Length: 217
Image 1 (cartoon, rainbow, N blue to C red):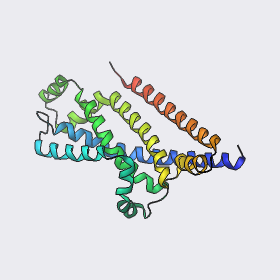
Image 2: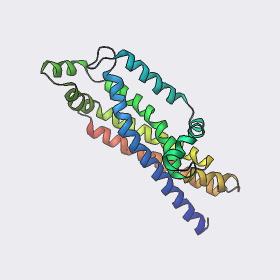
Image 3: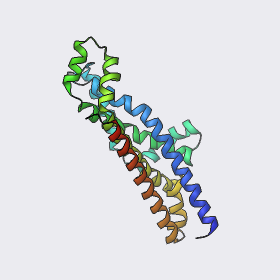
Image 4: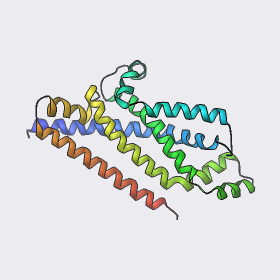
């Protein structure tokens, strides 16, 4: 493999890392609170509001059920409004984030629902406010599962980022399409696959490590 191709691989890796890092951060900032809201507004919980919960749940389900490649195309006008273009790494971050938020929200919802109801009742009996229950009981107790959920989301985003490259999103996916597929460069295709696998392994190992450290059980 030539020096120029190695430089392109490094550049593609940098673009993929940038897309995944930014979309992961934004989706965590929005997806975790959304997951909490889905739980606490559910039946019998601390801020029960069934109509709101069902409406929000329907929106989340609709967003989750849309295939990513269709989502990317469907929100091109919105992407242009946000970043001024529909091509490139910055443009790819918008659909990546929108795809990840509902996914992470459902994972967080499932994690928080695993928290022992007795802990919530104990906090309520001691006069804890809803915000205190969320910040001092629900999230801390569910944190190991939330970390694993974030790990799963990041891994999904790595796969989505490669898909984004197929329609001008940049990164390793774009490199694999333009050089590996269109120019019949098997070495480039193999290199991108190996790099993506390595990224997934690193993310999974890191997530497992931190989840284990946070697990008090």
